[in-house]
Length: 529
Image (cartoon, rainbow, N blue to C red; front, side, top):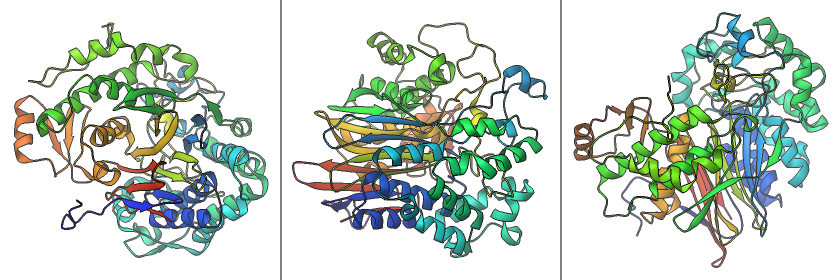
């Protein structure tokens, strides 16, 4: 029975349709579309457009997008809406500008041609039913007339104020009166409303061609970027349908987008976890330890081997093979924290997610991101577009699978997920939180299938994340577990802000019910009818 004294909320229950997002205005807008007869794709496009306005440091039309779509009775399809590097972008060209090891977040070279609008339009053209003008109406209203800033958005905004303030154009939009808006204050982005009107009228061409594309290219060039109008023109067709990848976990088939996303890392974590008894008898410290060690191993391989799909052929089959999984699982020592190593021992030197299930049983798992908080922080003053920073993922190492190159897609952290059973989708789900996402998929699904939690409880449970030489813990982890983990050699970092966020909708086709959850770490909610 649900503990009504827990200060948490129970999962949301409905029968016909449901949407779960991390912002109340996005959820409300998507629900309005579902109630008017729109399908899952319509509701998702409406909701993400709203969120690009009302949660501007997490997402935007200047970002990238991935989706998993499961039509009722049909196979899961993956949409890769990640943008490509400029045609002139090479390791040599960037090093000639003075860059050495990394591409900084705020560098114009961190801006790949945004793929989100290409993805929205491809998804809408293939599966939408309502006109874009109708789907963008709420977002345009909030952009032009203003919206109320919510608590989690205000907290994150204040945290990134100094960074976004370094760009004079971004500061004018996002730091009105010289400061981040507070909870309950109004904020508007009228230029984004104008961009959405163009896209509603002209489709993807309204963003990637004509005056808007010319202005965006010119602004990036003024910052030293290599992007051209031709690069933006090519971006119109960036989004492509691809085959998803999957593995079995907890009696279900778990689907992810293939590389260049890190969905492969999530599947590798699940495969490693499946080698251990993760049931309710496992101690809190042991559970966190196994998750941390599995994540370290998976992320090490992600960073070494994953990039544009053209540069990492065969990596999916290799990393998910029994040989590799058994080798990696055997490296986990329950008594101490270990250092990650590649399986064959070679010598080695911020986002929004939403999901929808419609009245026909179609399920959509959808994620849109500008990567870091406020992306690159670079805003074009003439179009109002804030550019993402996904190109910061590229390596400046010749021969590396994720080395920057002309028209190449970078490795991505954003990953929608889909759970299927007996060939049918039973749960679109996703986890936000930058690097945490692959580990988050593992924790969320283990909570559900190893511990028997429902979606809301599974995402509300205290989180941990072993990454970058430390073990991040939310305050809800017990003192006893903390002491035991320290004794095993983990360097603990107790978090002062939540680790990520998540949404999920579980489909019980036999009972005819939907059970949704929306992470209490964010402002959003799951609603249905």
